[in-house]
Image 1 (spheres, helix red, strand yellow):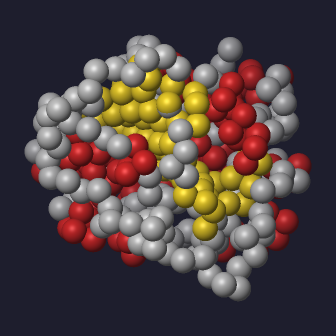
Image 2 (cartoon, rainbow, N blue to C red):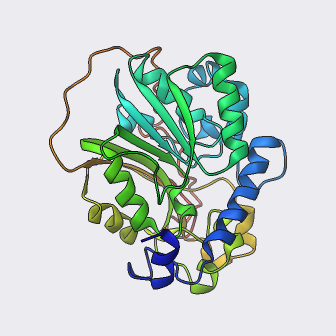
Length: 318
């Protein structure tokens, strides 16, 4: 069943699909936003971007120094989870929603030349920028493919690890997304993600507004329902969580004050089945971020309401 058909039928329930969201309209609006992220990163956006954001989220400054400046300036993630992914030499990695490639290039450094990383994105301008940076810097073990998370264009069991940063919230049918990610993982493979979730379900008015989806608010699922989608896809929570932290800014909240329960989250899971053989090839060079305050993130502001402010939650699933 296509993602569009699944959304219209609502078979997965109100928390995992959005029956009244027009999929193509949503994709067009998301592409419009991220086209500008790729082509004009110095423009005005409703979210933070670039190196300052990456360092706030826990990326090591020395790691960012080794990356293409243009990839870092178009970074628009919501968390840092590469340490949770525990990438090793020789592993095959999928970056689901790779944008201009910052996390993709970092992952390539961690798996080494014996490994490989594939970035998947639906925005042509992001793909063009990432491919140009790859070619310019000679990163020959990285590829960037066009496609949708609901219909990943890869054979079963293609990857050891899947990573994703702030993208799954933009998809209307999260159940299908997680089933696809589980399908392309080998048995015992790992999923490490950062994303936006909610403590309580958003109103139908917010969930049906494609502009708020593109603003990373309308698609934020209730956290327990989000995790249920992952469980149903056959993956097991492996802990290593970073609990919710607030976002520094989100101008779109002015349009939807009821959406202030949205949270940013990062975590890791493991797919069902036995672990694959351990890899021993050392990565080039080690770019794992150094934790700040024990969790890789800036402290939670003392004035913030944890149940009301956008925040980041990190998990690893396998």
